[in-house]
Amino acid sequence: MTHINPHLIALINYIVLVPLVYFIPTWVTPYLPNNHLLQVCIVVALIVPIMSYVVMPLVVYCFGKKASMLEKH
Image (tube, rainbow, N blue to C red; front, top):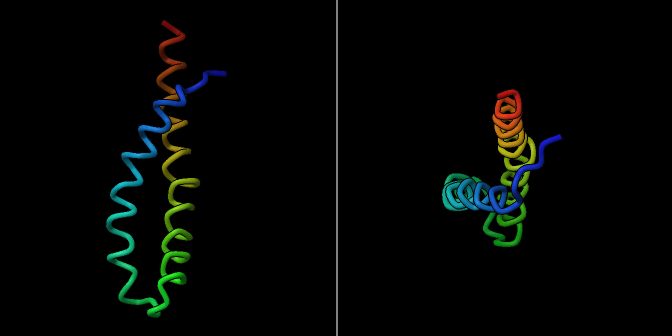
């Protein structure tokens, strides 16, 4: 099994989280109540699954595939 550098994972997390944290609240807030805590909870409830179930599996798949291709050569 190939391990991905944790520093690379942290960098990818940062690069992906910046636009998510910047844009999602702007898009979602007009449809939410004025309770700031509730807004934050809902925005985080949207961002975490995007990172956990979309972005990180794609990253692991892509880097795992790249690493396996490098091992063959």
